[in-house]
Length: 348
Image 1 (cartoon, rainbow, N blue to C red):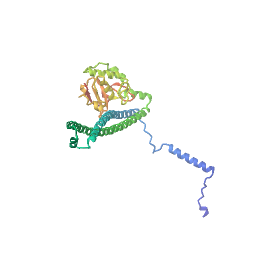
Image 2: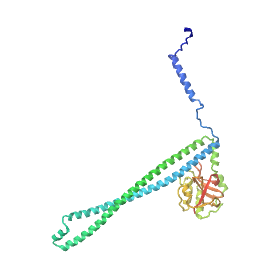
Image 3: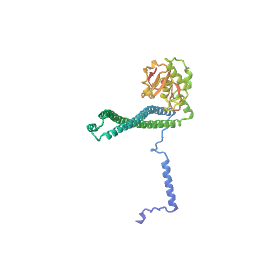
Image 4: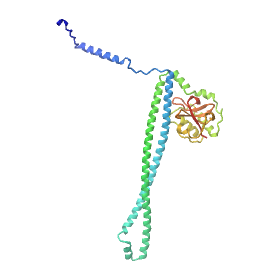
């Protein structure tokens, strides 16, 4: 029976045990570091796939930028309204204090003469004519007191209304500021991801993307001399001239000039130089004038792109526009058929 027993395994102890444990841990760490079926390495993309993804991210950032511009405009309006309400409430509160002081003087006069009734005062008066004159004066004072009391009631009610309106405006302002923070975070995230992807390209590939991804400013500018197409009005000509003067200036989201622009900021600034006030965002600018078809386009018209009306440029003729494309791409001339055309508006 003893001959068939399994030999007993020897347990390591001392230095041998420490060596075995070290080898086991090293093997486990190496196995964890090696790629296996469960590893999720980012797939390699071709340069074309990278630039396509970058375009998508830039477009999403621009959509968020226009939302940001709209929320910023509404936040500014809410802040101005809140300040106006607070100022009016402060002025009316000062008037209320003055009216209350007037009521106090009336009350003091009444208190001094309230000890005796009018008939007793007349009976005890040594000069009835003087008493009657004074009584007539007191009646007039009572009338003024009634008017002052009505004024106080009205002022108290108006101040309460103003404070309720200010509370509502403060809530609206808080909401707009929350939207601003959310849209800013979206913009920042999309732009950071776009930069990360662009960094995977070679310098030559990045340069090619910058030149051809949204049109080359230098090539387009040479192909379209200034004044080659006549603007329909002096104001339109002034807007086009401003846009030409902005060529080469950087795109900065939320910027309206004079040193940098986003897309709607450029068109707003161009028409402002011509004496025309445009709304701030692409989706409000499209309703700022008369809609025109693509075949009717004339220099100075606003041209809009994408289904969400998230990009705008200033038409300059011959199928070309000046626009602020995206971060890293300065204000430039580009063909209007490089993006999905969504409509056009003639401002003046």
